[in-house]
Length: 233
Ligand SMILES: NC(=O)C1=CN([C@@H]2O[C@H](COP(=O)(O)OP(=O)(O)OC[C@H]3O[C@@H](n4cnc5c(N)ncnc54)[C@H](O)[C@@H]3O)[C@@H](O)[C@H]2O)C=CC1
Ligand SMILES: O=C(O)C1=N[C@H](C(=O)O)C[C@H](O)C1
Image (cartoon, rainbow, N blue to C red; front, side):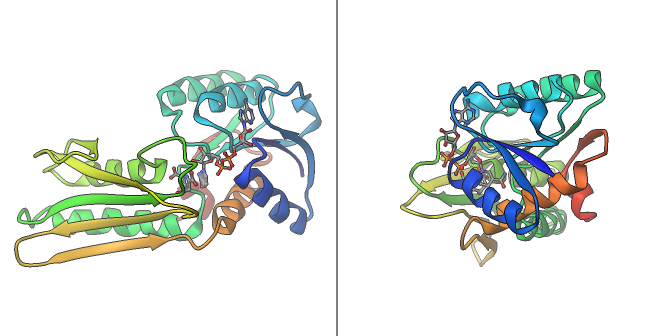
């Protein structure tokens, strides 16, 4: 596959390594608003910044290039990206987290939340820890985890960043040097605490997932998620 990397930072560079190992070619490495010809590529992979993601995605879809996006913090425009993809009969995958481990963790989180729905003495909270350069908070992964709990647990109808309220899930966002991504779900009662945790040791899992998703998407039309790619859930 000829891949356009829209965003050539920490993730773009890790994706390049894995894509080359899997026999693909990188034809575009775009940072900032570079003037590139997207039609040279078979597929675009966007790991850029929140304020640039929608523009990158719509540029690719407008030119009939399938696109994978892992950028977080741009979801206010997600419905517009879906509408454009449908109008162009294109192909699009967004995932807040492309790693296989986190996608298994998403399933674990939903199943645990279903069980905890009958045990109202436990209060849930989410903690995410990332590197200090991260632009958005809470992480996209923490938002997915919170929304998945809300969809099956009747005590909660929203989430709140760094704030405890009755019917909202508190998400604590911490920033520390060099942390690739740690997410913990805590169910706390007066008697005990149950928690599940995912710790990324590096960025390889995110990057491999994004390349596997690109390989899977090529030749398809529609709007998909990592559940479709990994056939789980
Ligand atoms: N979904 C997932 O599995 C993962 C998502 N991420 C997300 O991916 C994004 C990128 O993460 P990192 O690579 O760690 O950040 P980074 O800051 O290292 O790289 C972002 C790059 O985007 C570039 N950029 C700025 N404006 C651009 C534009 N208009 N078009 C193209 N590129 C532009 C910057 O110059 C920079 O090189 C973040 O939103 C992060 O939260 C990160 C890891 C995994
Ligand atoms: O910015 C990061 O680094 C990460 N961002 C994603 C998120 O916001 O959830 C995924 C991963 O946790 C790393």
